[in-house]
Each structure stands twice: as structure tokens, then as C-alpha cells.
Image (cartoon, rainbow, N blue to C red; front, side, top):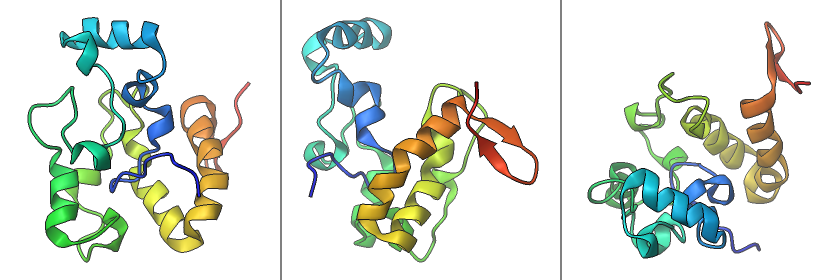
Length: 142
């Protein structure tokens, strides 16, 4: 089994700028500048390691805390799935993969971790680089 963190919300840590900043010093410097935080705090090993304390938000992640309070490993296991914390929003959608959470969690729940792992990077590529075809969903872009 791979060692990439698997947050309760369904995001893929390895594409997150904070996770990548752990091994990319130039990115870490840029994150520190952009978010006005000390360079040594400008990365994240994954929210399960940090108990949901993300360096670019105040306090503990509400989604992480909620999953813990409800005793679920992933939000898709919750009786209230999907909830407002996972709801898509057009604000910064071209930069942040928040709109992909429910799809990612459903894919993992219905096909299992191994199939999810095989598919999710393709899903992210379609999310950021695909072209929407009405009736067919996103297809690879140019």
C-alpha cells in the first residue's frame, strides 16, 4: 500500500501545493510568501499526521474534525454524506480541486482504494485540463 496520505475529505494530497512543498524548497518559499507564514511551516505531511491542523487555515480543519467526531475514516462513510463542507463552489475552482471531493470519495467507496488510486490522477487531469462535453462529461483537452 502506498504511503500517500488519504484525507477524510477525498482530496489527493500528492497534488496539493502544501504537500508538495514538503519536498520542493522553491514551492515552500513561495507558499510562505503567499500565505505570510514562516517557511518552516509552509508545508503539510497530510492532515492525518497533523490532526487536521493545516498551516494556511486558522485552527483545525472543520471537515477533519467532523469526520473524527462521527467516527468515520472518510466522509463518504457518514450518514450525512454529502454535506455542505464538501459542496462545490465556483470561487477559485480553477485553482483548488474542492469540487472533486464528492466524486473522489464516491469513486473510492464504490470501487475500493486500489481502483481509486489508479483512476484519481486521470480525474484530476480532466478536472483541470479537460473540456466539458454536454452529455458526456469532461474529455481530454488539447
